[in-house]
Length: 281
Image 1 (cartoon, rainbow, N blue to C red):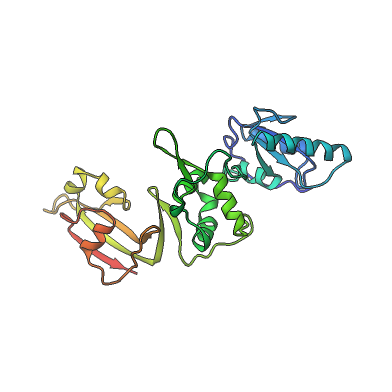
Image 2 (spheres, rainbow, N blue to C red):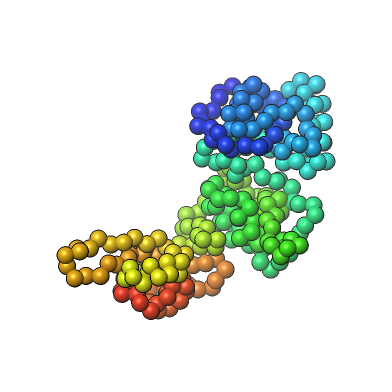
């Protein structure tokens, strides 16, 4: 066995109880248990109501371990406990992954998505899954892709298990398949966006106007105060850089001839008060 060389996130499995069963391929049982503890988790020997995750070894092992593996699997399925593989454990404790791969793998039994017409499916789901999965919160992804239901208080709740099932039904392997980088899909301030050819627009705005209501501008991009000479009679200015993106749910297509005011309307930035704008790309 070759133990993977990883930096462990000491909080990745905080408040998480893990059971390991079966024979692992890369780690010894002791090494796997040490990883769980180092990542802030607890190791248990058998599946109970307090178990959060069952890690299942892929190698057969002895007849005894086979029987134990089947028994723990059956209990985990009955209790609706997340069942994952050794590779998921390794990624989960790594500092760059945290809990991303320890998510429900079966559709939630008690709920179905409330708004079927909002579900992102097919090729769009494929692109989103491959580009977002490694660096996004699965629950946020589920909400943004329409895999959600409304609880009794009127709040949207994620259905991560339904999302995973939809991804698997497309034949996507989140560990092996590579993403098409032609359209860079990201999550920005709670909305799905895709970059278009790395076009962008520089915006210059008087600082006095920005300071009155910064929230009206911050949602669209980051702003920085420009350097200025206090000895010269010039007004302090803020500079914003909007990489041209389109919200996934919109039909707008980028057009080099789109006017400054229309662009501000699209990104919900007050046009009045802006000093100047310059497109690039």
